[in-house]
Amino acid sequence: MEVTIAPVAGRRELGLFIELAYRLNAGDPNWVPPLRSDMVELLTPGRNPFHEHARMQLFLARRGRQVVGRISAHIDEQALAQPVEQGLGPGTGNWGLLEAEDEGIARSLIATAEEWLRIQGMTRVLAPISLSIWEEPGLLVRGHDHPPTMMMGHHPAEHQGWIEGAGYEAAKSLLTYDLPIDKGLPPLIDRIVASGERSSRITLRTVDPKNFARDAEIAIDILNDAWSGNWGFVPFTDAEKAYGAKKLKPITLERTNMIAEVDGEPVAFMLAWPDLNEQLIGMKGRLFPFNWAKLLWWLRKPQVRTFRVPLMGVRKRLQNSRMASQIAFMMIEYIRRVAVGEHGASRGEIGWVLDDNGGMIAIADAIGGKVNREYRVYQKTL
Image (cartoon, rainbow, N blue to C red; front, side):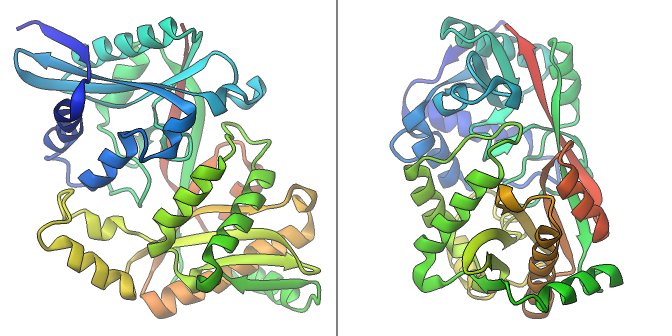
C-alpha cells in the first residue's frame, strides 16, 4: 500500500505518535523505554516551557491504517537568536524523534519535515534534535552495544545510513566518557585535589535541599556564563529554569551535586545523578499499576551501577586556569567517594562533551575516561 504522511491532530494521534517508538524498538535490548507520561509532557504546549519559544509540527506516516513512521519538525526562537558561528542562528530549524519501519518511509518523513521548515522560512536544518539542544541532541553512531544513561538517546544503527543518504553531513559530534570509579582516581589527580584543599580561597559545598531553588538558580547562572561561547548553546528561560529544577529535584541528591566558591563567590558547579535508566529499562514506559511505588522506594537511597555527570561548568574568567582544574578534580573526587560509598556505584559517565572541547576532554582523559558513545548532529542546506 502507498504510504501517506499527515500532521498529527488531536490527543489520539499524539498517542499513536508516542506509541510507535515502543513497537519499533521492542526488540532492542539496549533501548530504554521512556515513561509515556514524560513523552506526553515533552510534546504538549503548556506543560513543557520549550513550547513558549518554539514552533513544532508532528507528522505520522501510515500504510493504510497502520502507523509506520513519525517525525517532529520544530523551530526554537531562542536558537535563532544565537550567533551563526556557534552552530545555530537565523534560518536554522530542526527535526527529531524519527522512527520508521524502513528507509523509504524515513526519507519521506525527513523530506516532509524539511518542507515544513522551508515553508516556515528556514534555510538550514540541524538534526536530529529532540526537541531542545538540552534534551536529546544527535544520532547515536557509536555505542549501540549497551544502554544509554538517563537523558541520552539510543537509535537503530541503520538510521545513520538513512540520514546520510538523505543528503546530510556531520556538523558536530557529542561524546560520552565511561569511567571506572570504584578504585579511585590516578595519583596525579589525588595530588591536585590535595593542593586545592590547602587553598584558603576555595570552598566546596553540596546542594542545600532546603534552598534547592536558590542553588539551582546559581548553577544555571554559572552554566549560562560558562557555556555561552560553546557550539549549540541556547540560554535557559526563567520558565525553563523553574521547570528543570522541579523536574530534576527528586534525583538531585544532596551529596552528589556541588557548588564551588572562590573567595565566597560561586564560580563552578557539578551535577551527578544516579542513572535512572537502570530502573526504567524494565518498566516498559509505564508507572502504573506498581512501578511508581518501586521508583519512589528506590529514590529514597538509590543503589546503582552508574552515576552520570551531565553538566559541569566554571565561570569564563577562571577557565583554563590552574584553579579551575583544581576545582574540577576536587568536585569529581568528592562526588566519586559518595557515589561509591553510599550508592554502590562502580562506574561514571561524563557527557555529553563537544568533540572540540579540549578542556573537558583533557579532564576526562586525566581521570581515565574512555569514549563509550558518540552522537552526531547533522546539517543540510534547504
